[in-house]
Length: 92
Image 1: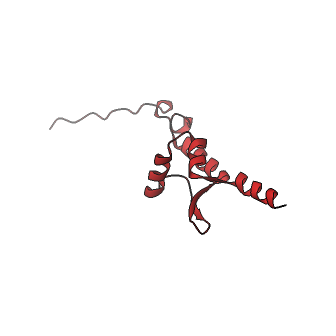
Image 2: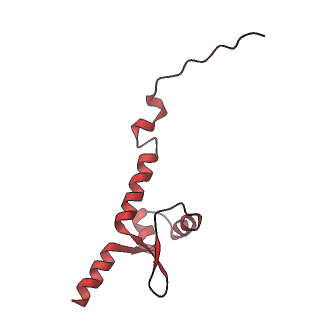
């Protein structure tokens, strides 16, 4: 029974090294994002205060980043908008 609960925790949470590997970035980048409060949500777990990431929140954050990028989200792509007409300047 103890092994099953440990496996459930390992499946739900990732440490910094595993989260960085999952995202395809360096551990240092993840620490910098955490310091700047720019990256995915994280928290400290346990008496040692290990930084951990919830798998589901990591996926949600990655999805948000994808939707915020104009190359991934066609609604944000400026090439899909009609060109604006320039206003003519009046001679003074």
